[in-house]
Image (cartoon, rainbow, N blue to C red; front, side):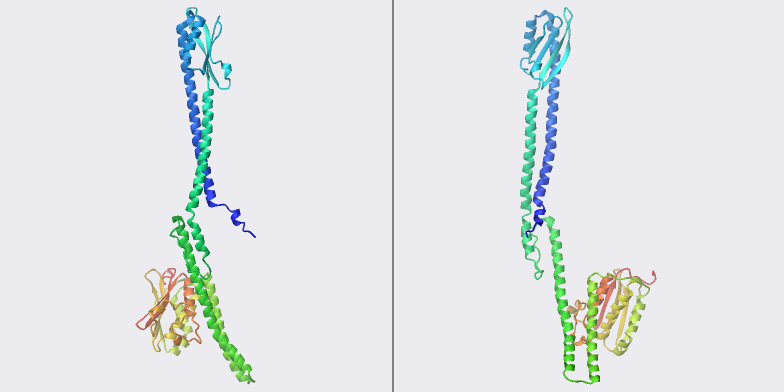
Length: 453
């Protein structure tokens, strides 16, 4: 089926050129109307001025000529007066005399005619009175206005058409680099997320879009790689216990065994199943954290008390490792106590696993320089190499496989710590030097000293 989405849409260049054409026609139309109105007003004023001027001159001529002149002489004088003004006409009516008609007759051009009637001053010496009708044929001015209107309308339409075509060409030329951008987008695939869009030939207006898209590609690339690595790590972690379970079951079914032997086999299988269940639970927790799970904060009056409770829970492991404990500092604030206990428990378990026997494990709760609170676990033991410090919070990562306790530890403890701290809006850190390793978190400013609580 043919895609009609582009047919239903409208070209950006056409929309811009159409909008510019309408705008240009509107502006030119206003200019043309103003020009036409100004010209019409000027012609009207000139016509009125001409009639007023000629009216005064006719009165002046009649006042001087009077009845002393014969009608033929008066008509001749008036004809001489109108020489060069063929568009004008004069009708003179006097008491007791025939009307004198000079120039164009008013009835010749009734549609384009302006006329002014006025009385003639008393004529000497008889004191006779008459009237005069002075007319002006405006056909030439009307034709001028008509031609001007045609020219202005044609100019407005031509200007709008020129602007439309010019803007269409300019927009298409300006958008031509987008075709190269489209070609770059076609090269992007799920397995080629390392590619980035080249915006060197793109206009400045598109640079923020390209930058944001490249940043999105970077996030997708990292997420895709993490997903691949996570899937591979999960398969690796689950493959060993599954292989052990399958081998154990096959071995148990090869011959008839006693109840005690079967119990031992089931007991070993249960340990592997518990380990697999722990991996699955931790993966589910991390998946929820990645999906934006939120904490349910409650007022914790003392982080020191929470740390003390967690140390008390690990008392057997601490005694078995021959470790002493110490808690320095305190703070309070709004946190999720359950999640914070889990994070501290993971940190303490990690510290117990690598601490030297007979050393002291210290919990530090100190205000940081940026207004946050630092909560960390410090232990004495073999230092972690600096290149590996930033990786210890990765999922399934073990700094030293030979000492990782792979049979009980699956490498998700510190990853869960980072997820819990991120859910609280904080950050994690790790330092290891001179035989002392400190791993902890920076909690946001909502956590404060105990006194304000």
